[in-house]
Image (cartoon, rainbow, N blue to C red):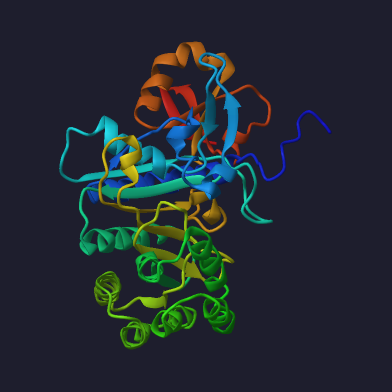
Length: 383
């Protein structure tokens, strides 16, 4: 292997793409800011327990670990920024007992890629709201997520909704143990109602309980799913609450194309309620994912209601609005010393000025302007 080669699923971002990504990041952070979200920059590495690898097996498998040569403790390179933001809300911002709106934009690193065509170094952008348990907060975040995705040319999108609270309420009512819950949740992901019926038929469940689990595998589609769910699922308080929250989201986005899947269980361990994601026909997987994760901060000393979303900005690398290379003013190397004050003044004003050493330069491609001494002053002229 050549020393310049990078590991698999790791790639450099070259000037054109880097310019597009940086511009998109600036637009996103500006969008978040005008919605009241404040930027945080968690560290790339911290003790692995702080990254919640001990409570989420999926996150644990993604996390790269090293030994801290100062303390001897195990460090983790973050694979997800959300646990770090939960730590910040619970610990560093604990003086605020009300709502914290926080956002972030930074690289994460995965031990393995999530797919054949995905990077191991996503550029994760997201927003989180802490301190309010009502569905209005979820609606706020969904609205912000949809606005954020408009920066890329992704075509028509589908807002996909689920609610993990329904499955968990049914599992609790049926007294399923951990192994049964895990086995059933994996089967429900395949939407095989017959296989689910066969599985729960071997367990000592009430007929209505078994029927409810089989129904979950079939309860997906448009907003009519909610009406069907009320007819086929038991009237448990947690189930009724979850269906009401889903209905509130549907009502809040009347013009959106919405897909509901009550067996959507492809989530990380810390999610607790409403789930939301966005799909497009041009992408093989979700463009963005989010949901409610109440109580995540208890691992840092303060359990709080929370909801938020994130996505990989690099997914949109080829679809972001094209940013032109800055029009560069060239100044000859021989003139630089004499023109120094003018050059620095132009740069302070935001004008790109690059030194021309007489060789081809990427920063001066297509440049047609030069700084020259003319009529007793340094002036910018067209070549």
